[in-house]
Image (cartoon, rainbow over all chains, first blue to last red; front, side):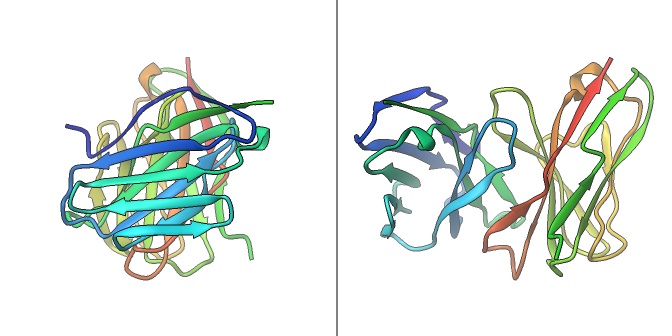
Amino acid sequence: QKEVEQNSGPLSVPEGAIASLNCTYSDRGSQSFFWYRQYSGKSPELIMSIYSNGDKEDGRFTAQLNKASQYVSLLIRDSQPSDSATYLCAVRGAAGNKLTFGGGTRVLVKP
Amino acid sequence: NAGVTQTPKFRILKIGQSMTLQCTQDMNHNYMYWYRQDPGMGLKLIYYSVGAGITDKGEVPNGYNVSRSTTEDFPLRLELAAPSQTSVYFCATQGGSGGTEAFFGQGTRLTVV
């Protein structure tokens, strides 16, 4: 089992719709969770961080964390063509304190 | 304030050659990481360090070596380059105890022919 898993996509959504991305992790002791956006040929950039169960909203982005289910998600509301990118889920595990990334979900927002 | 600086940005190596990818940060962060990213894939952890003098293996350490003699520098050494090491390499840092945002360098695109 991979430490951090994501659907690779592509996730195709029409402009203005909600994009829903999911991520599961294996280390039950993990405490820090991050969503990064990566445009083609560029470095990842942080969108959201979440540390406790529940929802966290920042503009059009909402991160949801459920530690019991070992699940973290990202919602993108009112999706824009500029949101077309790969979204990477990252988890800082309890074992070794290392930051592990999932394989990423490619999102395509169609005008 | 440069943040995280990686050099070189691009490099072509012949099979069997060796090289060192440089990573320097001026953020005084304890945590530093090396990842590789193959086309269309996520980031795979090669090595990481939680402070000067401390390094540990990640998911894909074979064929690589690291050292961390100072807080600022975390070079990645490739010995006997192989085509399977063709990838984009990212260095990243995290402050505090590692639970905060990771900052990335611009990446090094390496091709082994």
